[in-house]
Length: 237
Image 1 (tube, rainbow, N blue to C red):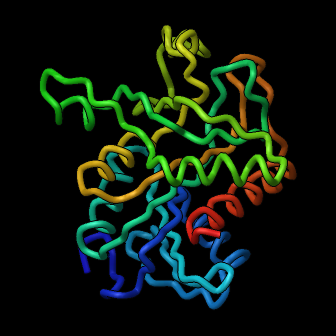
Image 2: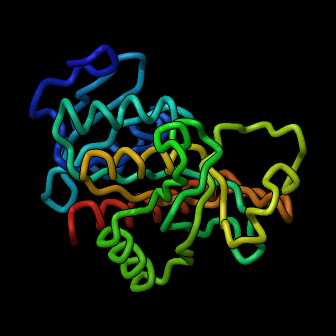
């Protein structure tokens, strides 16, 4: 147990999905996992363990932003022994080639966060995904006919920039950054630090270029595709 997690040793599977929203964690557990049981409820940051295709898997909410995610990921790895961590979330689009409802599989995660920058002194560490998970996700997505893009994601600590729209992201879109979310870079940095596997898969729900937003019904359908893809990768199907 930790100040943020009441689960007992062995309550988590070695593989976990990490949505930010606690209610999304509950939705995943109720709609995808067999024999799901709640293992954490501290601060209402819900965690569950069940099975997918007969194999154990957990889902744990991380809250919004890299500071919050870093707490849960650090504890899941160091107190509960988790080995594979897959973020499932939503993102904004920074590239005209990525449409709403498309998936972005984050090969790397640029960031403005001091959580990453301050840890490496004069070096600019490049947070990247586990290659095996990345390859499996891309292959599964292609086999299922999903519209998925593999590339660089921005993990920003700022949701409301002083400059609106694309202006808040400088030259990043011109350098191939596909989307923006708030967690992946910290996840990849901690995974590298503690020698575990990590991947972030996000559904693009709003485009900062066209200002198109996903409808509530399409959001649910797209999230189902993302979660199914993540679960298949998580258990090695």
